[in-house]
Length: 139
Image (cartoon, rainbow, N blue to C red):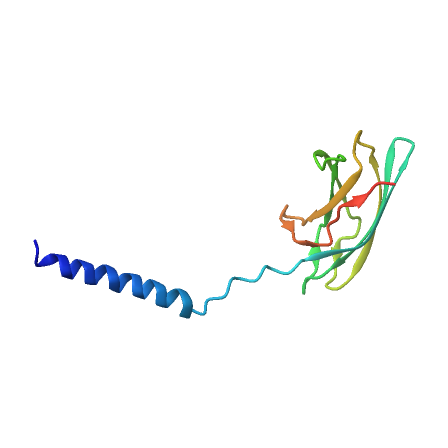
């Protein structure tokens, strides 16, 4: 057993050296986040007669058209607690690559909601990555 002790120590030291060496020389870079697929270029929200009038302009940042785009509005309280989520389908069929579209909708006014964040899903229900999702204040 005494003969095995130096070999074990050498094995452990070699392992620690390799771990140290490869941790500084691997050159591995962290993965970059995927780019956004939709950008909110403008959004205004106004309260009127128990409704929230929404005017949103979104741009397709994809290299291919987006099919069946649905706008998702998440309403939050003053302490940023979720209040409700409402959806509206965009009337246009496909949103061409690089194209913009306007969304005009009247949504039910949720009690206690003061801000809104935007997200979007495609025809298959896949949530899209959004640039400038908010929060946007309800006026």
